[in-house]
Image 1 (cartoon, rainbow, N blue to C red):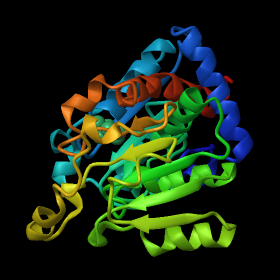
Image 2: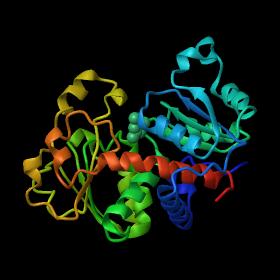
Image 3: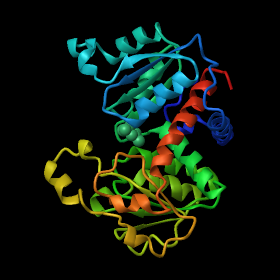
Length: 301
Ligand code: CP
Protein backbone atom coordinates (compact mmCIF):
# COMPACT_ATOMS: atom_id res chain seq x y z
CA UNK A 1 0.00 0.00 0.00
CA UNK A 2 1.51 3.42 -0.87
CA UNK A 3 2.15 5.85 1.99
CA UNK A 4 -0.85 8.08 2.67
CA UNK A 5 -1.53 10.92 5.12
CA UNK A 6 -4.82 10.14 6.85
CA UNK A 7 -4.03 10.90 10.47
CA UNK A 8 -1.22 13.06 11.79
CA UNK A 9 0.07 9.85 13.40
CA UNK A 10 0.97 8.64 9.89
CA UNK A 11 4.00 10.95 10.10
CA UNK A 12 6.75 10.40 12.64
CA UNK A 13 8.22 13.45 14.34
CA UNK A 14 11.19 13.19 11.95
CA UNK A 15 8.89 13.07 8.91
CA UNK A 16 6.98 16.11 10.16
CA UNK A 17 10.20 18.08 10.56
CA UNK A 18 11.42 16.91 7.16
CA UNK A 19 8.19 18.01 5.43
CA UNK A 20 8.30 21.36 7.24
CA UNK A 21 11.84 21.93 5.99
CA UNK A 22 10.77 21.11 2.41
CA UNK A 23 7.93 23.63 2.81
CA UNK A 24 10.47 26.29 3.78
CA UNK A 25 12.28 25.60 0.49
CA UNK A 26 8.99 25.98 -1.40
CA UNK A 27 8.20 29.26 0.36
CA UNK A 28 11.57 30.61 -0.80
CA UNK A 29 11.17 29.25 -4.32
CA UNK A 30 7.45 29.14 -5.02
CA UNK A 31 7.33 27.43 -8.40
CA UNK A 32 9.17 24.13 -8.81
CA UNK A 33 7.66 22.03 -11.62
CA UNK A 34 9.07 18.67 -10.50
CA UNK A 35 5.78 16.78 -11.06
CA UNK A 36 5.14 17.61 -14.74
CA UNK A 37 4.07 14.05 -15.59
CA UNK A 38 1.72 13.66 -12.60
CA UNK A 39 -2.06 14.01 -12.24
CA UNK A 40 -3.63 14.78 -8.87
CA UNK A 41 -7.32 14.35 -7.98
CA UNK A 42 -9.14 16.62 -5.52
CA UNK A 43 -12.34 14.85 -4.45
CA UNK A 44 -14.39 17.10 -2.18
CA UNK A 45 -17.59 15.58 -0.83
CA UNK A 46 -17.89 18.58 1.56
CA UNK A 47 -17.48 22.33 0.98
CA UNK A 48 -14.04 23.91 1.13
CA UNK A 49 -12.30 27.09 0.04
CA UNK A 50 -8.76 27.01 1.42
CA UNK A 51 -7.98 23.32 1.47
CA UNK A 52 -9.12 22.54 -2.05
CA UNK A 53 -7.76 25.70 -3.65
CA UNK A 54 -4.42 25.52 -1.84
CA UNK A 55 -3.99 21.84 -2.81
CA UNK A 56 -4.80 22.76 -6.41
CA UNK A 57 -2.42 25.75 -6.31
CA UNK A 58 0.25 23.53 -4.77
CA UNK A 59 -0.23 20.92 -7.51
CA UNK A 60 -0.06 23.56 -10.23
CA UNK A 61 3.11 25.09 -8.81
CA UNK A 62 4.66 21.62 -8.83
CA UNK A 63 3.76 21.28 -12.51
CA UNK A 64 1.10 18.55 -11.98
CA UNK A 65 -2.35 18.52 -13.62
CA UNK A 66 -5.45 18.51 -11.44
CA UNK A 67 -8.78 16.76 -11.92
CA UNK A 68 -11.64 16.38 -9.47
CA UNK A 69 -14.90 17.71 -8.14
CA UNK A 70 -16.10 20.10 -5.46
CA UNK A 71 -19.69 18.85 -5.47
CA UNK A 72 -20.27 15.11 -5.39
CA UNK A 73 -23.85 15.79 -6.49
CA UNK A 74 -22.49 16.18 -10.02
CA UNK A 75 -20.83 12.77 -9.98
CA UNK A 76 -22.03 9.17 -10.20
CA UNK A 77 -22.22 9.13 -6.38
CA UNK A 78 -25.67 10.67 -6.97
CA UNK A 79 -26.56 7.50 -8.94
CA UNK A 80 -25.55 5.33 -6.00
CA UNK A 81 -21.89 4.59 -6.78
CA UNK A 82 -20.04 3.55 -3.63
CA UNK A 83 -17.02 5.32 -2.19
CA UNK A 84 -15.01 2.16 -2.82
CA UNK A 85 -15.83 2.11 -6.54
CA UNK A 86 -15.26 5.85 -6.89
CA UNK A 87 -11.82 5.61 -5.29
CA UNK A 88 -10.80 2.51 -7.27
CA UNK A 89 -11.79 4.26 -10.50
CA UNK A 90 -10.01 7.52 -9.70
CA UNK A 91 -6.91 5.54 -8.62
CA UNK A 92 -6.67 4.35 -12.20
CA UNK A 93 -6.58 7.92 -13.51
CA UNK A 94 -4.22 9.73 -11.15
CA UNK A 95 -1.03 9.54 -9.09
CA UNK A 96 -2.40 10.93 -5.82
CA UNK A 97 -5.84 11.60 -4.33
CA UNK A 98 -6.80 14.43 -1.99
CA UNK A 99 -10.18 13.74 -0.40
CA UNK A 100 -12.56 15.53 1.99
CA UNK A 101 -15.55 13.56 3.23
CA UNK A 102 -18.16 14.14 5.97
CA UNK A 103 -17.81 10.63 7.46
CA UNK A 104 -15.14 9.92 10.06
CA UNK A 105 -13.00 7.05 8.80
CA UNK A 106 -13.86 7.59 5.12
CA UNK A 107 -10.33 8.75 4.31
CA UNK A 108 -8.73 5.72 5.98
CA UNK A 109 -11.09 3.46 4.06
CA UNK A 110 -10.22 5.25 0.81
CA UNK A 111 -6.52 4.75 1.46
CA UNK A 112 -7.12 1.01 1.92
CA UNK A 113 -8.82 0.61 -1.46
CA UNK A 114 -6.71 3.12 -3.43
CA UNK A 115 -3.63 2.10 -5.36
CA UNK A 116 -2.14 5.61 -5.00
CA UNK A 117 -1.40 7.80 -1.94
CA UNK A 118 -4.42 9.46 -0.33
CA UNK A 119 -4.31 12.72 1.64
CA UNK A 120 -7.13 13.24 4.10
CA UNK A 121 -8.39 16.80 3.58
CA UNK A 122 -10.81 16.39 6.52
CA UNK A 123 -13.06 13.49 7.54
CA UNK A 124 -15.98 14.62 9.65
CA UNK A 125 -14.94 15.73 13.14
CA UNK A 126 -11.95 13.37 13.08
CA UNK A 127 -8.71 14.61 11.48
CA UNK A 128 -7.33 17.27 9.13
CA UNK A 129 -3.62 16.45 9.02
CA UNK A 130 -2.51 18.77 6.21
CA UNK A 131 -4.06 21.66 8.17
CA UNK A 132 -2.02 20.50 11.14
CA UNK A 133 1.17 20.51 9.13
CA UNK A 134 0.53 24.10 8.07
CA UNK A 135 -0.34 24.99 11.66
CA UNK A 136 3.00 23.55 12.82
CA UNK A 137 4.78 25.44 10.04
CA UNK A 138 3.09 28.67 11.13
CA UNK A 139 3.82 28.15 14.83
CA UNK A 140 7.48 27.58 14.00
CA UNK A 141 7.50 30.62 11.68
CA UNK A 142 6.02 32.93 14.31
CA UNK A 143 7.75 31.62 17.45
CA UNK A 144 11.07 30.45 15.99
CA UNK A 145 10.54 27.02 17.56
CA UNK A 146 7.99 24.25 18.08
CA UNK A 147 9.04 23.18 21.56
CA UNK A 148 7.68 24.55 24.82
CA UNK A 149 4.77 26.53 23.30
CA UNK A 150 1.80 27.67 25.40
CA UNK A 151 -1.25 27.23 23.21
CA UNK A 152 -4.82 28.18 24.07
CA UNK A 153 -7.34 26.34 21.87
CA UNK A 154 -10.67 28.17 21.84
CA UNK A 155 -14.16 27.39 20.60
CA UNK A 156 -15.48 24.11 19.25
CA UNK A 157 -13.03 21.60 20.68
CA UNK A 158 -15.56 18.78 20.36
CA UNK A 159 -16.22 18.82 16.64
CA UNK A 160 -13.19 20.82 15.44
CA UNK A 161 -11.01 18.30 13.65
CA UNK A 162 -8.11 20.75 13.33
CA UNK A 163 -7.63 20.95 17.10
CA UNK A 164 -7.66 17.17 17.41
CA UNK A 165 -4.89 16.73 14.84
CA UNK A 166 -2.89 19.69 16.19
CA UNK A 167 -3.03 18.43 19.77
CA UNK A 168 -1.59 15.09 18.66
CA UNK A 169 1.13 16.69 16.54
CA UNK A 170 2.17 19.13 19.27
CA UNK A 171 2.52 16.25 21.71
CA UNK A 172 5.99 15.66 20.22
CA UNK A 173 7.12 19.14 21.30
CA UNK A 174 6.42 19.57 25.05
CA UNK A 175 3.41 21.88 24.73
CA UNK A 176 1.29 23.41 27.49
CA UNK A 177 -2.40 23.53 26.58
CA UNK A 178 -5.37 25.56 27.70
CA UNK A 179 -8.73 24.41 26.35
CA UNK A 180 -11.32 27.17 26.28
CA UNK A 181 -14.81 26.01 25.39
CA UNK A 182 -18.40 26.00 26.60
CA UNK A 183 -19.34 22.82 28.48
CA UNK A 184 -21.08 21.40 25.40
CA UNK A 185 -17.96 21.72 23.21
CA UNK A 186 -15.13 20.69 25.53
CA UNK A 187 -12.20 18.63 24.26
CA UNK A 188 -13.36 14.97 24.02
CA UNK A 189 -12.11 12.63 26.74
CA UNK A 190 -10.08 10.46 24.34
CA UNK A 191 -7.78 13.40 23.54
CA UNK A 192 -7.39 14.28 27.22
CA UNK A 193 -6.57 10.63 27.93
CA UNK A 194 -3.92 10.84 25.20
CA UNK A 195 -2.34 13.88 26.91
CA UNK A 196 -2.60 12.29 30.36
CA UNK A 197 -0.78 9.18 29.12
CA UNK A 198 2.04 11.38 27.83
CA UNK A 199 2.17 13.60 30.92
CA UNK A 200 1.36 16.73 28.90
CA UNK A 201 -0.23 19.52 30.98
CA UNK A 202 -3.60 21.04 30.09
CA UNK A 203 -6.31 22.95 31.84
CA UNK A 204 -9.89 23.60 30.88
CA UNK A 205 -11.85 26.83 31.17
CA UNK A 206 -14.99 28.46 29.80
CA UNK A 207 -13.57 31.95 29.98
CA UNK A 208 -11.60 33.56 27.16
CA UNK A 209 -10.78 36.93 28.74
CA UNK A 210 -8.22 36.23 31.43
CA UNK A 211 -6.68 33.38 29.42
CA UNK A 212 -5.09 35.40 26.62
CA UNK A 213 -2.12 37.11 28.23
CA UNK A 214 0.11 34.14 28.98
CA UNK A 215 -0.21 32.15 25.73
CA UNK A 216 2.10 32.17 22.70
CA UNK A 217 -0.57 30.92 20.31
CA UNK A 218 -4.28 31.67 20.55
CA UNK A 219 -5.86 29.05 18.30
CA UNK A 220 -9.43 30.18 17.59
CA UNK A 221 -11.99 27.88 15.96
CA UNK A 222 -15.48 28.20 14.49
CA UNK A 223 -18.43 26.38 16.05
CA UNK A 224 -19.02 23.62 13.48
CA UNK A 225 -22.71 24.12 12.70
CA UNK A 226 -22.72 21.26 10.19
CA UNK A 227 -21.86 18.68 12.88
CA UNK A 228 -24.83 19.44 15.17
CA UNK A 229 -27.84 17.15 14.96
CA UNK A 230 -30.00 19.53 17.04
CA UNK A 231 -30.16 23.12 15.67
CA UNK A 232 -31.21 24.41 19.11
CA UNK A 233 -27.96 23.13 20.59
CA UNK A 234 -26.05 25.09 17.94
CA UNK A 235 -28.05 28.25 18.67
CA UNK A 236 -27.12 27.97 22.36
CA UNK A 237 -23.35 27.97 21.77
CA UNK A 238 -22.79 29.67 18.40
CA UNK A 239 -21.86 33.11 19.82
CA UNK A 240 -19.99 32.01 22.93
CA UNK A 241 -16.76 33.79 21.97
CA UNK A 242 -16.07 37.04 20.16
CA UNK A 243 -12.42 38.04 20.28
CA UNK A 244 -12.00 41.80 19.84
CA UNK A 245 -8.89 43.98 19.51
CA UNK A 246 -9.45 45.53 22.94
CA UNK A 247 -9.10 42.09 24.56
CA UNK A 248 -5.51 41.86 23.29
CA UNK A 249 -4.12 44.82 25.23
CA UNK A 250 -2.14 42.60 27.64
CA UNK A 251 -1.11 39.89 25.18
CA UNK A 252 2.56 38.89 24.91
CA UNK A 253 4.38 40.62 22.06
CA UNK A 254 5.09 37.30 20.35
CA UNK A 255 1.49 36.06 20.68
CA UNK A 256 -0.13 35.17 17.36
CA UNK A 257 -3.75 34.36 16.68
CA UNK A 258 -4.29 31.40 14.38
CA UNK A 259 -7.58 30.12 12.97
CA UNK A 260 -8.05 27.40 10.34
CA UNK A 261 -10.81 29.62 8.83
CA UNK A 262 -13.49 30.24 7.81
CA UNK A 263 -14.33 32.48 10.75
CA UNK A 264 -17.86 33.51 11.56
CA UNK A 265 -18.25 35.69 14.69
CA UNK A 266 -15.45 34.37 16.93
CA UNK A 267 -12.87 36.93 15.72
CA UNK A 268 -14.03 40.52 15.20
CA UNK A 269 -12.81 42.32 12.09
CA UNK A 270 -10.86 44.85 14.21
CA UNK A 271 -8.49 42.06 15.28
CA UNK A 272 -7.25 41.84 11.67
CA UNK A 273 -5.37 45.13 12.06
CA UNK A 274 -3.48 44.09 15.19
CA UNK A 275 0.06 42.65 15.04
CA UNK A 276 -1.32 39.46 16.63
CA UNK A 277 -3.50 38.46 13.67
CA UNK A 278 -1.73 35.79 11.59
CA UNK A 279 -4.58 33.69 10.17
CA UNK A 280 -4.38 34.95 6.59
CA UNK A 281 -0.64 34.28 6.41
CA UNK A 282 -1.36 30.87 8.02
CA UNK A 283 -3.71 30.10 5.12
CA UNK A 284 -1.07 31.21 2.60
CA UNK A 285 1.40 28.83 4.23
CA UNK A 286 -0.99 26.05 3.28
CA UNK A 287 0.26 26.21 -0.30
CA UNK A 288 3.93 25.65 0.62
CA UNK A 289 3.15 22.94 3.13
CA UNK A 290 0.83 21.11 0.74
CA UNK A 291 3.46 21.30 -1.99
CA UNK A 292 5.82 19.65 0.48
CA UNK A 293 3.36 16.92 1.49
CA UNK A 294 2.56 16.03 -2.12
CA UNK A 295 6.24 15.99 -3.16
CA UNK A 296 7.15 13.86 -0.14
CA UNK A 297 4.37 11.29 -0.61
CA UNK A 298 5.24 10.93 -4.29
CA UNK A 299 8.89 10.32 -3.40
CA UNK A 300 10.28 13.49 -4.92
CA UNK A 301 11.62 15.01 -1.67
N1 CP B 1 -9.17 25.36 6.99
C1 CP B 1 -10.04 24.75 6.17
O1 CP B 1 -10.15 23.52 6.16
O2 CP B 1 -10.75 25.60 5.35
P1 CP B 1 -11.73 25.14 4.20
O3 CP B 1 -12.90 24.43 4.86
O4 CP B 1 -12.14 26.40 3.50
O5 CP B 1 -11.00 24.19 3.31
